[in-house]
Image (cartoon, rainbow, N blue to C red):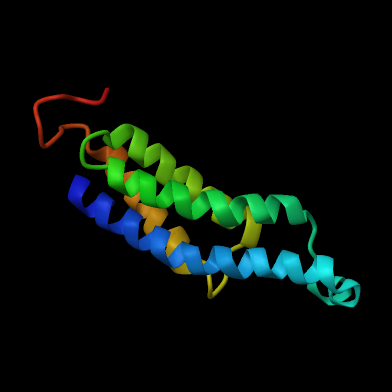
Length: 121
């Protein structure tokens, strides 16, 4: 389960980089072009920029940690999935990063009996 969490987390992070770039550009466009802010309708642009950077970072780091520190990696993956959902909602662009990070986080935390001899609980 740890290997699956690792792969899912890294894939979610790579996909999330593209979502984050789009989100960051979305905020930049709304600040540079005031007319665009009317149709973009950003509620909290600073949070969107924060989540655009931190969520993919947490997914990749959580996936990388899932093999040796499954509990920490799983928590990072679940926080990353939550940030994607809070900033962008569940839509066609975010369904796979949210799904992969969420499933990877659940699998990492559920790996109570570790592959190695050290437990994480």
